[in-house]
Length: 200
Image (tube, rainbow, N blue to C red):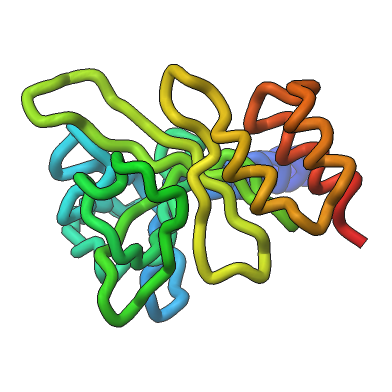
């Protein structure tokens, strides 16, 4: 009887430990600039946009704390990862024709970009709201691993910025041809092709 109790108790503890571990993995998190990862429930102070001034974390003990966006490098909410970058253009300028956005820690403003896919060529989305509007808008941004800048890959309803993309992928002739001939029509297709065919 005593042996059965010990076995039962051991199994119960193992299940609880496994449950806590799985819960911890599935939790939202913040990575602050010191490199520490804080797990819990991430909430926006202003739910209208991810690029708000503060983010709140409710940790696993139920304690609430607000963090300024300048103090956060990465966060995950609802299984979506946002990475912080200092970009040197304002939200208004992001909507102009300039396809290049430099990472500029000295003069830039902090933005959180939604990570769509990560690789030698990474795909991000910059989300924003027009003044007075409730529909979330976004633009597709691409970044090669070695580049200190992003390029804008799409032009809203008009689709891919083909000329910009052809210039950007100057070192991958096959990809340039496929973009020019309209064999690839989605940003995800371009990212996938580059990461499989253009990295050596």
